[in-house]
Image (cartoon, rainbow, N blue to C red; front, side, top):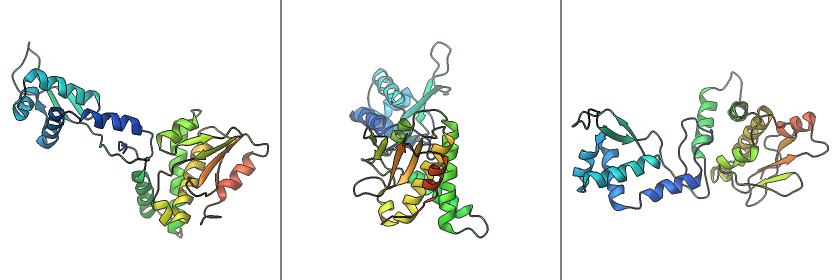
Amino acid sequence: MTFDSPAAGAPGPTTTDSVAALAVLGDDSRRRLFDFVRRARRPVTREEASAAVGISRKLAAFHLDKLVDSGLLQARHGGHGPRRVGRAPKVYEPSAQTLQITLPPRRHELLASLLAEAVTGAQPGESAHHAALRVAQERGASLGAEARGRDVTGFLESLGFEPAEDGSGRTVLHNCPFHPVAAQAPALVCGMNHAFLCGYLAASGHPRTTAVLEPQAGLCCVELITGAADTGDDVADAACARDDDGLP
């Protein structure tokens, strides 16, 4: 599971962060408090939460603040209950983030966002397939421009690719965030994955790293090559011009 990100494709909390957030709900009182706040559909005070769950206000405050620390709830002063020392009471409400977990990590919301944009924004005379590749490359380039000069590995990890370098300039991606959809439509989804990473690399300031389609069983269909003697703009452009060549 991962946290849904407001901007699909942007790096967000890792799977470890999400599992840690779920662990907070292991306590029964904390889980019931979270459920009460989520179902209230309005900000609730500590007094309301403690009465609903049947625990003391002090204990409710402790658990509610733990839920805030985990990112599951958010808090502010602004309720209409009894004031303490002249300050508006603290109220709690669900955070804007949605908690989902898949192990290994999946980013189906990113794939769905790209496909929706391709369908609704196809250019005149453009096939659905090429619209999807174009949108994927544009999205990758947009994220790359925002992260220019930053570590590529960190970006890949944030999306769940599970990169591993082999010491020779080759980075294998051990997880496909778009599986099992990629297995159902490899020419389309692997092509989009490749275009997305090509766009990111081109815009993020890593000219010596190239994304290439190298489908292998048990691995992502894309791998990265860095620092090869013949890796230049022409080679990178040629590699990123491929879409479904060699796919199963």
